[in-house]
Image (cartoon, rainbow, N blue to C red; front, side, top):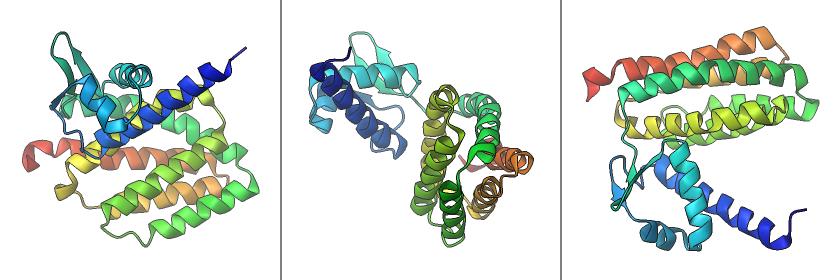
Length: 217
């Protein structure tokens, strides 16, 4: 049985994780930077044990590298790493959206349709696009109701969001917006086959960006 103290520690560790993941994704902790555990404790305002748990989790997800006797390094953004991430993410997302299309309740379908409409108004505003992308992920995950697939795909989504921020000066969002809006609409229509194809299309947008890194860096 989980005690109140254990639940509180777990909750703080999740809070620390959420804070640090956001700082990593939005480049407030820039790729390649060296940072100490103490600095992260000060940054989050949370105690040593929850922050250590969050660091370990982020290290397991390849967002931090632990360097003995030196501290932590924020994992650099690399072309090869992103290719591997997208290769792994694609089939997981396909599974999740397939289940989501089959399982979505009427209220969830309405929410997906609303996200699709809001996507159409984003234009080239990356922060708004990524906010809606995150909302879409959460809604799709709730529809799919497969905690194993959701846990597996979560770190890949973090890496991809970080990649969008890292290359934001070179991003044209029209294709990504169209693909994500289409995905939301197809799940809302319970079109599982169409949703899988739309999910692949969202990954293709990132694959093309990754392929163009040599030309834009």
